[in-house]
Image (tube, rainbow, N blue to C red; front, side):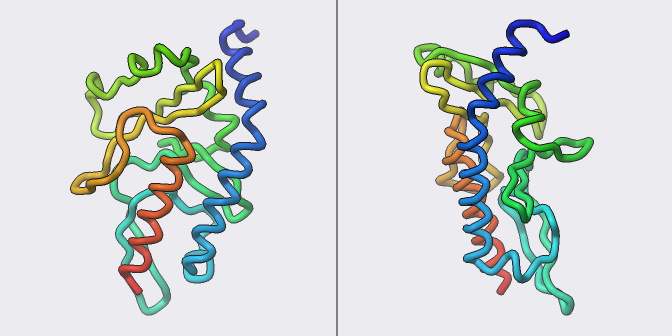
Length: 170
């Protein structure tokens, strides 16, 4: 039996389903417009910075830094975890903190991060239902938002890095 806090988090995540579907569709469209979906046959792609290499039989890529989100060819956002990826709306509960808008600045935990790739961390503002993710900039990258970042901004920035890496290998 789940406790009241977990039930509340699950209820709020369920309410975000249309937003998550739309964000997944936009991300998939970004990859499609760049030609990534035609060039790479993978069913799941990271939403992350990556180094691409052209091979005789296509492309290979290696993500830089932590990969917290994937996108499927169906446009579903996934939470990328060491044990495997799960649909974002199913896996996020364990990593989600509810916060009030005035407490948002205090909710960031970057100063205390001790791991190279800390586990994913999400914050949902209860008054607005705005979803944030804790973001660490990939090494050597400037202009990338860090700290608590709106999930759509994070996904857009990381998808753009993936596209830029792909285009550099063309």
